[in-house]
Image 1 (cartoon, one colour):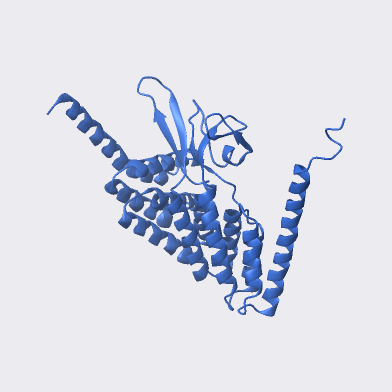
Image 2 (tube, helix red, strand yellow; image 1 turned 135 degrees about the horizontal axis):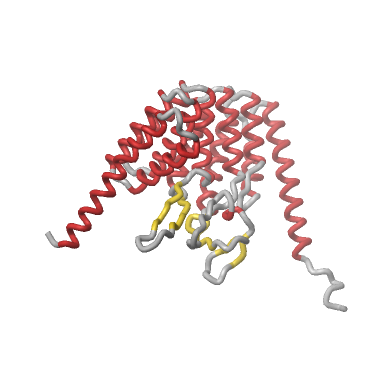
Length: 335
């Protein structure tokens, strides 16, 4: 075997071994009584990175470790962190069996776990969709101590699948679970655009919860730059618009169910009212069609009509303000 091929094989084996052992390391760290939450978070982040770049065997070891921690660890905080890890594993892993095992444990927790863990599942799925749950990759230079950080969102398909998963959970859930899911839907519908791909900045990391939602302006690079100087090459607003419209449609179907409790219906309508869409008319037309549905009770129809009126008034106020801002007073230019 040639020296170069031997080197490549050795490096590959080293990476696989490191990835496979990270699941065991994470399990050991979570089993320690003296481990603080910073150490736990770092270990979990290392595991997510290993899973994203690792083999099916690596992912299997990881899902086994996280399933065990999320169900049997005596520390409630550690179980909640393991739930976040399972959601990330499902999104960033590529093995179908691992994905099924991860989702099955999340479903078990949602149905039979403590209330705190049920909420943890909802929040982790919500954060995956909004972009607040991702992977911070660390790229260490071979020739210096420089470490480059890059935040990575889940693929748009995985984020959209998480929305569908949450809708399925809503249909199965009780009043408590539905209330928290409706709040999560509201956060998703109101979520600002996030960046898929940043131009790397030396010694810094661009996180979607910070710079991506800031005011942007055209940059010479062809992308958009934030006030802090990061340049975004690709935003996710088109993808978000797609699953936001699908979620609105799903909420309409849920609101037409006669056995939906008044509190759940009110929470869903509140979520709809806060939706931020590229075309605000989409929300108005959705509420208009819903208000004319024969499946609504009189009480629910009144609630929908009130939400429709509020959306129409808000849209008119935004349109009027925008029109006035763009107008140039006749007195200008005559001085």
